[in-house]
Length: 96
Image (cartoon, rainbow, N blue to C red; front, side, top):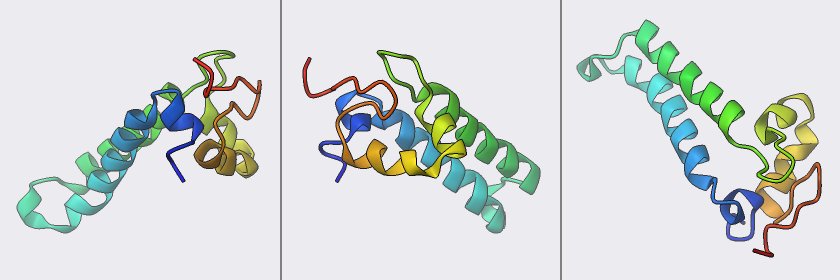
C-alpha cells in the first residue's frame, strides 16, 4: 500500500513515522510509571507529533499541507496512502 504512495514517492514518509511515533509515545508512555513521563509531558509530546505531521507533510509542487487538508476533508487520506500523485494539484511523483 505505501510502496506507491505519494508519501513515499515524495520522500516524506519519514515525517509521518516521526509524527506517529510521537503520538504513540506521548499517548502511552504516561500509562507506565517507569517511563518517567507525566501526563502533561506526554500530552505535549503527542500534540507536538500531531502538529509536526500537520505542518511538515506537504506537496513539494503546490505547497498544500496534505494532512491539514485531510483534517478538513477525510476523503484525502486514502489517496495519500494509495496514489502517487498530489490529491490537490495532481503533481505525479512517479516522474522525477
